Image 1: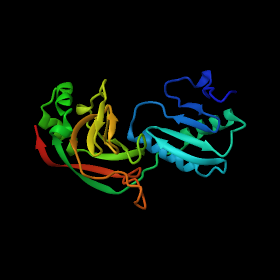
Image 2: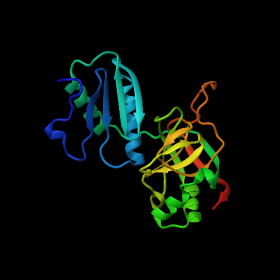
Image 3: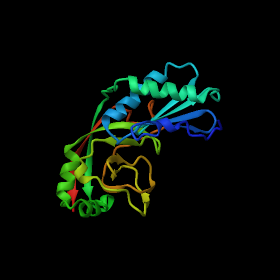
Amino acid sequence: MTADTLLTSDRHHASNAPVISMMGTRAILFEAPGAFTMEQQQRIWALMDHAGNRADIQELVPGVTNLLLIFNRSPEDLEQIADWLRNTWESLPPRQIMGRLFEVNVRYGGALGEDLAAVSAHTGLPPKEVIRLHHEGEYTVCAIGSAPGFGYLHGLNPRIATPRKSVPSLNMPAGTVTIGGMQAGISALTGPNGWNSIGYTEICLFDPYRSSPSLFAIGDRIRFRPESIEL
C-alpha cells in the first residue's frame, strides 16, 4: 500500500463511515462521517484522548470533525491501524470538555464589518436581526488551526449561516468577527480571508510571548457582546 492510498475499502464506503487516509508517510487523517455537529466533535475529542495512549504516536492534531495522527515512524500495517480507528470510533462515547468562558465585545458593522449587508441579503434578515442572532448564541471552540490562534466556533444559528465569499478580502484585519458557512470565527492574523466580516473586536488571539500563545483552547466557550452597532 503506497503512502497516498486511501485506507477505506469498498465495505467502508457507506456515507455513515469515517474516511481514513495517509498524509505523507508518517501521518493518518481520520475524518468523521456526517455533518458538523457538537456530538461528532466530542467524539473526535474522545478519539484524540484514546489515541494519546498509543506509544507509536508522536502528535495528535484535532480539526473540525477530523483528527490527524502523526506517528513516530511510518506505520508498517496501515490496515490494522485503520481498523483500530474504525472500531475505536464506534465504541467511544463523546467526550465533553468544559473550558473557560470568554465574553467578547464586538463593534458590529461599519468598515470592519463590511460584509454584514451581504449576510443580511443572503439570509433575508435585517442587519439588526443578524446581529441579534449572532450575539445571542453561545459558541464552543472545536479546534485551533488555519492560522495560529484561530478557533473554529460551533454554535452559529443556522438562520444566519452564509457561504464563504467567492472573492476573498485581501487584507482582513486580525480581530475581525466573521461567519463562514455554519461556523463563526475571529480572525487571528491580518491577511487574505474568505469569511464574511460582520464586526470587530480588540482581543488578541495569538501572542508568542504569552505562556500559552493561543488565547483559546478546545472546549472554551465564547459569548459575543455588542459594544456598538454601525449600520
